[in-house]
Amino acid sequence: MERRYEQQLERMLAQAEVSPELTEGLMSRLENFVLPFTVALFEPEQRRHTVEYITGLLSKLAHKTSEGIAYLHDQDRQGLQKFIGLVAWEHSPLLLTLASQVGDDLGEPDGVLVFDPSAFAKKGTKSVGVARQWCGRHGKIENCQVGIYMAYVSRKDHALVNTRLYLPKEWTKDRARRKAAGVPKGIRFRTRHELALEMLDEPGPAHINVVEESGLP
Image 1: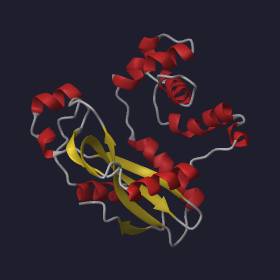
Image 2: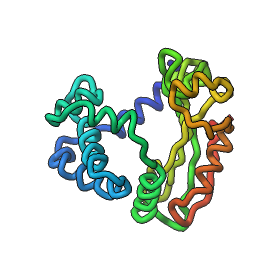
Image 3: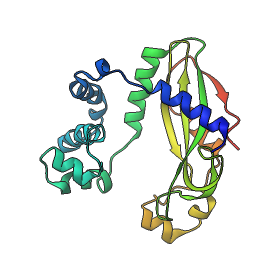
Image 4: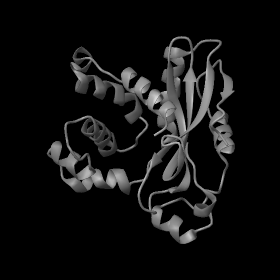
């Protein structure tokens, strides 16, 4: 890893340090935080599984699989597995709730939106959107997935408010691969800039100017 990426990683890790006092009552506070988002889910089971899954991700489990999280909550694994991988639910209302909260808490007249891609190294060929492409985290061409993120930044603080998964052209042209990975038929190839503009057109925090990061090739 190049030194400039190491320095950035060091700064990020320093900002991510959490004091023991901040974790007191974490799970109960987390349930209260998740509640406005679960309102957008129609089924009571979906609302319950949402809280179970998120608390499981923050637990001490060595392997945070849906099966392991279900057993952690003394639940049958099939319910949580269906919630994660099979049951359809709409994500847009949840992102709208997030954007509204960010706008209320951090909104300022001179706040800006920042668009930036971020890659996650992956092995294999079956994860949606995985391909050999530029991985900024490693500073080279790597087998990875790339997400386009929209963040709101003001003098108060900053927070992510929306995201899109970049689907390379090789994926959009391969029907068998798309079907096996569960990619909806209506999804077509869009450049990273087009994905950013799509997020910009959706409802979000008010009083926004746009700053485009140079990382969107």
